Length: 183
Image 1 (cartoon, one colour):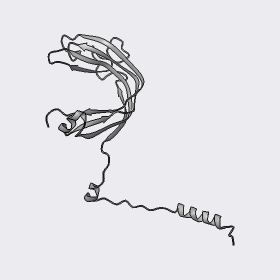
Image 2 (cartoon, rainbow, N blue to C red):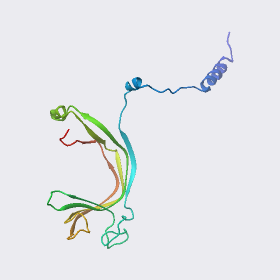
Image 3 (tube, one colour):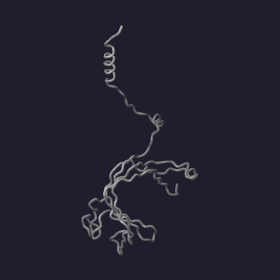
Image 4 (tube, rainbow, N blue to C red):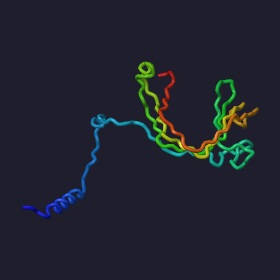
């Protein structure tokens, strides 16, 4: 004996069961239960960084708006290589940097590094490089300077080369930041 309506009735019954609302309950975990849960710690960052697209906040005899051809436009970063040496400068920094997937976490080094990891046996900061960094109208100059600031007495700067970047840079790997020798 066959039932010609068995397949449609079975299909209809299955659809009704599948469309019924499902209930799930979220319950808090106690300290003991939570201590048994393992996950991945860290921070995942994505974003856009815009630096001085139109010029910086300082306008004086040296710095100005980007449409002022007789003045410098953008951020400035100066660093000294030796205590009594001159200054290396990144000057006129401006543009847009965009990235997705920069990670930041703490990592324990207790092996590897040609045997030095076992002796080190401490935590380091690990920066996971993003897959792609996008540069849009990025400009900066590398220079040598007699002083850190253009407003300091005796300021003389020699621009070494200028950089303009447009497009994507593919990055891979991790950057490990080790603490100084003091525990």
